[in-house]
Image 1: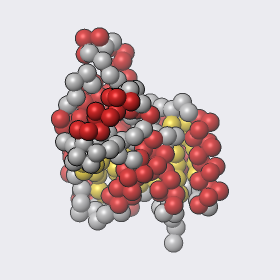
Image 2 (image 1 turned 180 degrees about the vertical axis):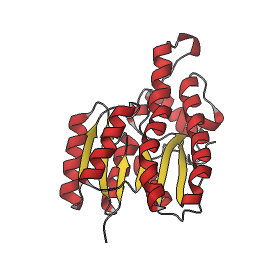
Image 3 (image 1 turned 30 degrees about the horizontal axis):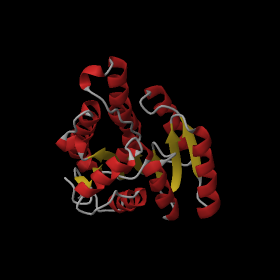
Length: 244
């Protein structure tokens, strides 16, 4: 039986890297993407191929660029076959007052965090519909529902991810394709290394679980979600240690 193919964006580090490792361990053929950390991505692909004996195709480029995404899916199709699982994980943050934010900074957050979903789903969906199967998982944030001070663009983009997820789930449910999202709380990744040690302690104290989440915990949940029955669709699943 042919192994399923998973395309994971933002896979060079953090949650995306952990998801790639978890999926490789489960026997998936992988297409891995990042925008700038090409050396790290290539090293990860080589490591996963050697360790788990699964094909790993690195694709370096901007998934908010439709031309790149179109070419990426053509390459995946040629090298690995139809994409069965799409994990939209690519994302960036921006911390600061809204009034200090430039239009360029605003557009970049929206493009990377939200426009990338449109681009990737546009090219992943048609073959899934043809096969009447597939799963799309979007990595969101608790701030997409609650909103965070000094993270207006990030919160707005993740709110868009949540609505995108629910709407596309309704569109694709008749074709047996599940679309879900994981709304992460504070996960111990480079994105949160902007905080001082004291700020990290204070933040951990606010979380009922008493700690930051681990990337591998998000990865385990991701694998579980994409392997769930397609009847579970349109869900925003929170992973935050009871915080929000």
